[in-house]
Image (cartoon, rainbow, N blue to C red; front, side, top):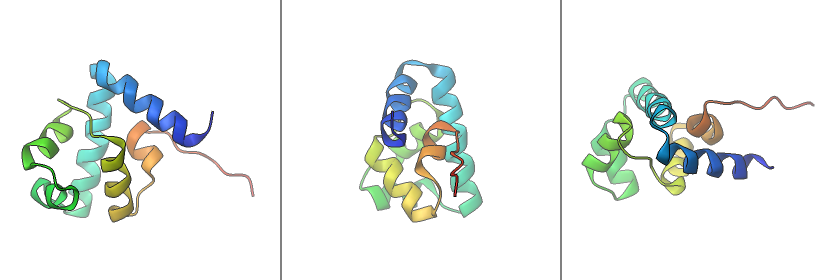
Length: 92
């Protein structure tokens, strides 16, 4: 299974698993705090409500994949790690 498919699968599992959802929310919240980015700013980037972002940060709901892609790209963080907490080691 490729990395993107693993990420999508993890997000789908997170919707029904409160532990995964909370862990995802913690990574998202920590990443946004370290970058000094507010929920309001993320909401403007994604054209969603600030309460949507607040729910994501608190683990009440799970952001859609497109939101993760845009947040990760904007903050220059690995989308797979942001979604799953896992990193990949590349042989080179």
